[in-house]
Amino acid sequence: MALKDYGDLNEMQLDALREIGNIGSGNAATALSSMLERSVQIAVPKIRVLDYNDVVQALGGPEKLLVGLLFSLSGDITGMIMFLLHKEFAHMVLSSLVGSEFDGSSELDDMDQSTLQEVGNIMAASYINAMAAMTDMTIDISVPNMSVDMAGAILSVPAIYYANISDKIILIEDEFDHDREGATSHILLIPEVDGLYKIMESLGLGS
Image (cartoon, rainbow, N blue to C red; front, top):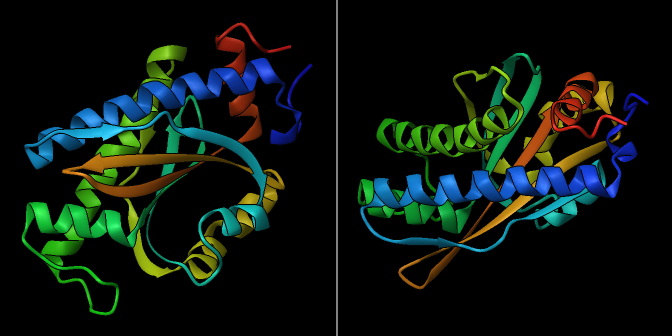
């Protein structure tokens, strides 16, 4: 039976998403280690299917400051993927790569924005490439649109799009450790529901 909503995912299908998340997270940690030229460890990612309001709370509440990068998906799967960096993650990246401080109170210059966009692109691509490899599908991502704002404001942008797809969102939470400094990022995975069914079908989990 075809999926009608993210909430229809059964435990085996959620396990498949967790496996994609595990591979994507491992790829992301490897890519980040290479960029920062030092070891980055990552915990097993947490993957949940949540209501929109629960996602906002899981991110730390509507006033939590985040850097958001929104990508469109195209090819065999259409939809969106959103990469969310917490302030500590953005600071870790900027201080390591360009020597910038990031406390959320100052504007990002062009170099800072370019750096975060490149990191976001690499991290998001790590998940999409893992999904494409497991499903033998062609999935492309767009150049990201980036914003620095509170979680409630950032999520209000794709909220209309969510409503047209599902009342639930796939949330992937990653915990990174870099030189004993912890940092958190989140991925919001928002494929069209028929695309989600294609993914499950390709994995032999379509019914």
